[in-house]
Length: 138
Image (cartoon, rainbow, N blue to C red; front, side, top):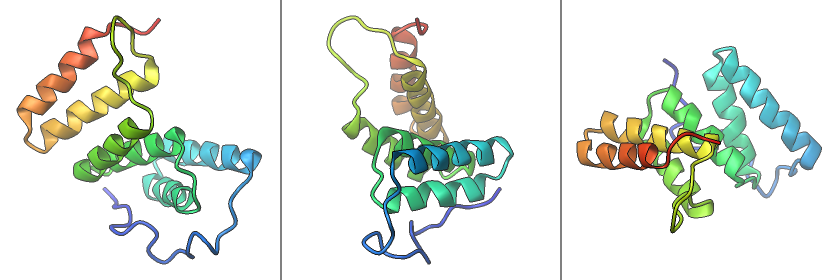
């Protein structure tokens, strides 16, 4: 498997120097990340996702893409760190009864797999409980 840059942004211009994409460009670049990942070009997709993050896109979509791509290259600690950042930006847990949507379920699944791969069986078990407790998506 390939590896994503160990230091995000290595070799890229500073965020202050790079132009920020408008909404249409951002959507096209996110689609490109998805297509590259679908074609198995995880390294290229990861570089593009990291570049979008570095130019100031800290949206939930970019964070989720970065977490998934890091998971694909088996960098579980980095994927978990991005998932924690995503949880701070867009928390999943709420009070009361609720159902997880498809993206939230994927986030819980990724978290459980990363924790298990890192040897945190108790944390993985807790993540699986949350994953299962909130049922099927609507």
